[in-house]
Length: 198
Image (tube, rainbow, N blue to C red; front, side, top):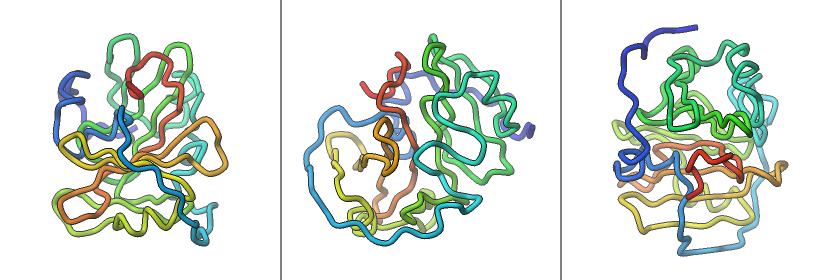
């Protein structure tokens, strides 16, 4: 496992909720302002090694126990987050935004997996960072999912879309000032008490 993030202080749940932009992704929007049906586009090869799919990323899957998740070799920097546990993805998996991480519930296992700048959803949605003009546009996100919601009540717009192929999970996309996805993640609809869907 990598150690590039060792020693970093993980922001508490309150700071995640109030932080701007990229860390807002850990929480699903409480109030959706738009619910729109859109025809989906053809998905790229879902078997891609770098796909954040509807069930997980590589060998890391939603619902895995903490021990199973650790055994994948994809996690580093274990930290407590209330009753839940939080990890960074190993840096070899690509750059993820600060504050984004894998969240594990003691009762539901892995309940959230962040995206990195190296991966995409099966629908082809990618993320950039606040430091570049990369990442899918909101138009691309809207065209990739049959149904989605938009929450503009926080410091950054958040798109939420059901994960096609998994009726118990959804993707979350944080949108930057340039109208592009700056963060993304896969979250279980039932977060096992970790406060992600509050």
